[in-house]
Amino acid sequence: MAYITFLDTKQQIVKGNEVKEFLSTQDVIYEKWSVDRLDENLKKNYSLTAEEKQQIIEAFRAEIDDLSARRGYKTEDIVVLSDATPNLDALLDKFKEEHHHTDDEVRFCVDGHGIFTLKGKDGRYFDIVMEPGDLISVPAYTRHWFTLCEDRKIKCIRIFVTPAGWEAIYEENEVPAN
Ligand SMILES: [Fe+2]
Image 1 (cartoon, rainbow, N blue to C red):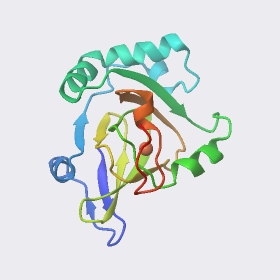
Image 2 (image 1 turned 90 degrees about the horizontal axis):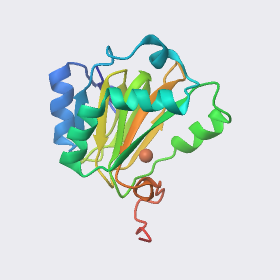
Image 3 (image 1 turned 30 degrees about the vertical axis):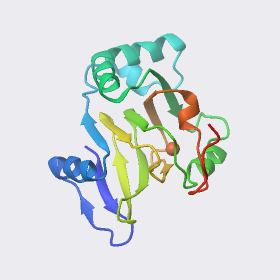
Image 4 (image 1 turned 90 degrees about the vertical axis):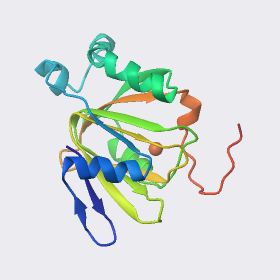
């Protein structure tokens, strides 16, 4: 279950219903999709073939389609980050920079962990620490950044409208070109 830590006071929200409730005040969708349905290889293997990636996506097809119908998402893929990823540290440096997107950023954590730090509606920053089974949909234009946890690995399903909509915009007041 995901939990929240506020960056300024270190106050935490750890109870499932309170996490979900707090995130809904920020217009962030939070859902739990059980990863028990996946066999161990699909969970633990970080060098997935295209076919294995598709098997993971299909295992969550019903949930993906339901969320996509509600939010207008059109496609999905799998992203894997681990120490086996070329240039992992350079990638992480990039993900650590505050940015936003013109579409929602939707991530389902299949394995590993990750931290999405969001700028709340009142300007307070908070971490969402994600574990396997956590889905979040961060609304378009929400300022945020991403880091890994100590295990330095995550396997995620990304769900989106178009790849153009998730291009990172680093300047807060930049008007998108399209
Ligand atoms: Fe992002």
